[in-house]
Length: 422
Image (cartoon, rainbow, N blue to C red; front, side, top):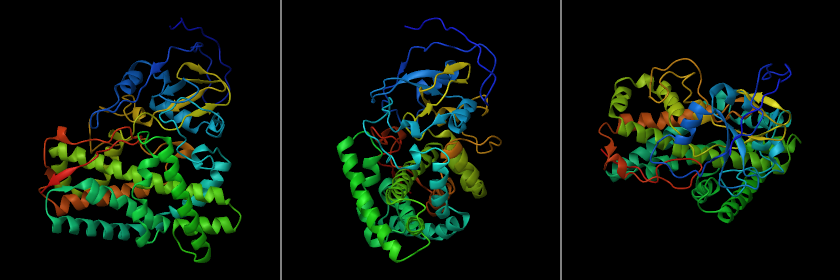
């Protein structure tokens, strides 16, 4: 039951503080079961909250603490994800209501760090994500894509793009980034999916993480003896110099491996599915290939690439957000998906507009935890889509769009299979 909100004057100090009435009571929480949504449908709860209750209370399926705040407006999401009064490290001893019954990332990971500790860890990893390294990886990525397209042509239609392209390609790129030898890559195929899914359950996820940890430890030990420019080499050198601990090195490598392979696979498949079901968009990219980078950016903004939300933050002091008083100790989620559909920022946000200009989207996050692999992820999507457009001019789904099966109970959304002909 929701009571009438009380108000109080907030002292005018800090970037988000104002002297105006703010809601003082906790509204009733919205139950958010995170049911599987059809295809690329946008979550109706996020749409409703963005329009009518942009700072709301929600209850997710797991966690000892049953409720948390959720912010959905673009400016509020910017504040929560960049204001130091909202902490990730304060999550370490909390079991906030969430999407899974297990902790996906290691406690030593960047995800649970705040500056200045987060800044130290991030500084090490970004050495492998420089423009120079992305340029080094692009020809390797192009070669891998060409080999996969050649194999598709030899086999002939139909082909499941999840098996023939979106699965092997991002895994190969992240292995090139990390420095995994070709003959050791097959063992990686299932691990990222098991870690980033609520479906298989916590025990299978823990087993997959243990296997990844064991392999990464072996790889870092090898790189300590045989330096290289790849991420494993960067981490091994930082470990030898005392910049990071062994646990931190393993955690950083694992995070890049799991998120890089799994997220790009699904995000890129979502883009291709949308283009296949929107022939006017596909036709425009064929006619204007130079538009591809801008189109990829708009698809990143538009496509709801995940279920629910990521990790929350904990307010370390009372903060007013969007006219609502969030108390010290409260957990706060920020929805990048909803922020990317905020009509106050994006004109006609529910439309795909390859000519869209202006404010940057938040598909890769915001603030200290903005995704380091954003440039690499864009490059991978461009390589895959460009190859499909040029190599397969008659590319099409083999059946109606509604027949495409989708993954269930995954944190990242995507097709289970994507069968095409040409």
